[in-house]
Image (tube, rainbow, N blue to C red; front, side, top):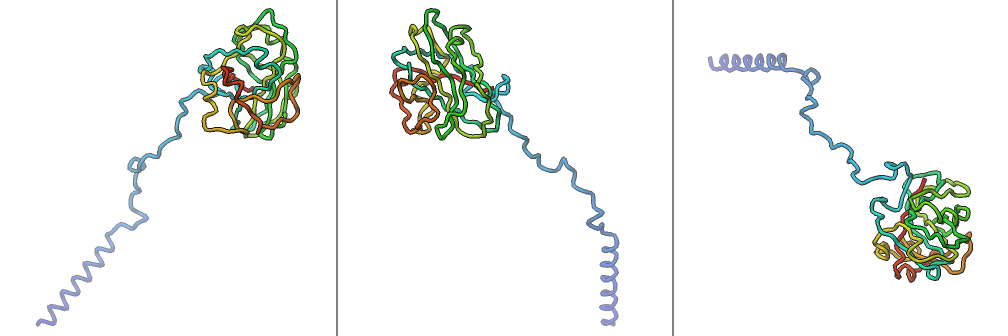
Length: 231
């Protein structure tokens, strides 16, 4: 009697397991989890700061809206010196123009042998303008100065060079700059100073300069870091 009862119980349990297996939903038939149940992945971060491309430019030393300072130096102070402002490119570009913020002009100035150019991180002159003396006598605005020959600039560090020569009244021939002046070099040393001067007595931009000789003695006198852009 006891044996028959136990056998019946086992048979009932077996039938229950078989029935359960038949009625369960296979994994490939179960409803997929809806997308709304998944955690949302963050989207790309929006850039808040103005970009050069917002103003049809390729690069700049800073937002021109921040270049509110006007800086000037005497011919004795910067004449014949090569003034360098560092710029870092993050993509490959064709560099055709250097934009300079000309804040004021001296109608009585006698200018000659004034140039803008571009040095790479090795101190090699990559391109330069023709003599820009006539353009420094007119139109006190931000304007492009074309390079004599555009060049392909790979990502990396470059230095925009300014060379002034002649005579002019200090505080009449003025350039747009940042108010930071010497502070732009915080944490930096030659040959990677963000703002510096090199050499004296130059009437053209040398084909090669030694960036380890970057000096801050002139800019310590108030020759503020000029604003430049690239197109």
